[in-house]
Image (cartoon, helix red, strand yellow):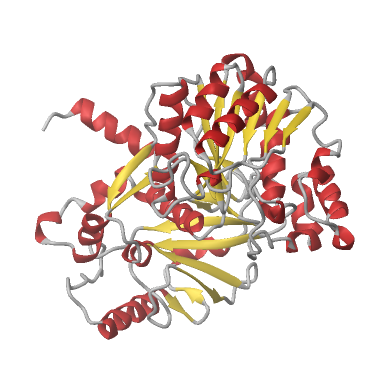
Length: 456
């Protein structure tokens, strides 16, 4: 943590998460700022949210009002402001600067453990997160990392832990799962959780005696932060595997649905039945999260709220927008589908995308009648002021032939002036990694049943 970051939108989310976990002072808190000197960079300048109360205040009104007041009139940015506030009535703070020097770091770590003694929840707020091999203790900028030895010492002393963690340059879902496993392996915690925001990850290890309060905070108080902070998955016990995450092979998936080689004929309908709409929703959420918009699939049906009426495939909350989503898995296997040659020039690919778009869109509306229902208003599962329609297609398409995965077009609909369109093929073609981990609970369950019922 640097004082220059104080009061930015990431701070707002961070303190909101702490307040949700601690409840009404149900848990005592020790905040280890892990301060490092300001560096004069522009990092920490994300404070425009304080000028948009209609958009941001609803998540935690008391916290928002305090931050808006504290950051007004050119106030100096310092964690000292929070320490003097009443936002965390049962909190203590460790404001020592973290040193790079090995011996000095050992002294700092000893003070850290002693200052947190007897507190329920310890929050570690390093600049970058948990240690990496290239920055061992004693090296330059090692002060920007928390070390596993410090985590283990705090856990052994009886505290639950929340740790700030930057995303690294890898698949975010895979990274979150890997960090959760490491935290579980290092602590043996009965409750391990991760919380994802548009920019960072927070890792939680909960002691058994704190579990009830922490789980209540996750299930209830954190709901106010929908679209900004969300659990990566539900709480898991130490030693268990996440059976909701499925790894897809990006290249094979593109070849199967876009090129439709002879060996795939007759299998597409069955494959779609296993993954289908859930794959489209999961790829959409993955896209938003990679573009730093916190997103998740909301539970519940996407209907008009009447016994008879249209039904869509799901609700996706992304940032401050709630999308009613319809998924169409039309591909080269579909009736009238066109196989995509394995090699195309950039110009030929652009022409293919334009052609496929013109096949589904005409005069401000979708050509196919079953798809047009996405432009009818559905009844949201939660009260929301910004509901928009979004349709997911498999095929690569774009009105101008571009490779954009997500785009918006104007409509002639009486209900929505615009429609957002997401192309799964465009998105997967833009990724670099061949293996992509997605949260696909229904697909995972079906694959498990297939493995039990049939032995190849």
